[in-house]
Length: 297
Image (cartoon, rainbow, N blue to C red; front, side):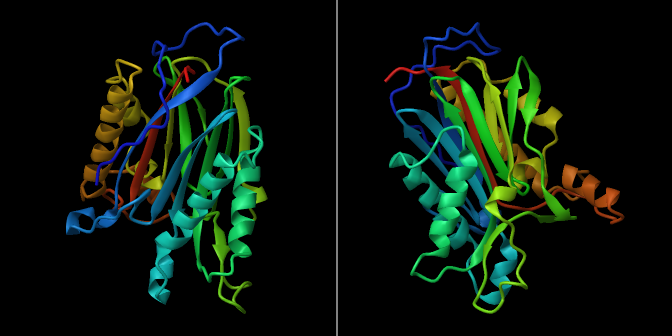
């Protein structure tokens, strides 16, 4: 199901490709979201900030814009657990922490850690696992602070080239790092990583930089060059243009996921690990597409 989301009255006074920075200006992210649940073709849709077992949030605070994507681990379905409950609850909790100002822009891993430990202490039983990626733009410092646990991730594109990207974290093939809550007595059996194990990075951004934050359903089906081709169609920094491009990227990834003859990045990775695999990888797909713009409240 296609959907888009934007927060606040933002004027995107940016030219794609970047402008010279002026220290006195605050920056913001103009963001649109789009995605598909894996069961979209069966007519199964999901309301709220979820595409299948993926979940996300887009939150604004006076000091920062914050984005998050989490991919619920589907294997829990075999045990009667809805995988989307964990990812959705994690993202909702992180979103609330941001809106309440209970975070430090330079520490997205702090948001993830606080959100996860709140889930662990929740009186309402919750089981499941998910990957997670959180991106924070500090308005005043013009720095992007990121943390990524598992195989969701982000790209930063400037002048048509990828200038920053997250590092994928895998224990072994198709088994990403993940946060988990296991049933009592099964803590040592269920794979679970610490939020502090997330890969963290910070770097400066410029007006007009494009930030693509997504679940592995995108990256497993579209290599960088295809994503960059779609981003070239982004001719304006206004919200409608961002929305249209986000939809185009998500739709192409969704179509490729069901192409049995396509040598997808996932299939190539499988072959590199000694498996004879071809085709796309049917999966939930979440795309958050952002442009760095001058902040106007």
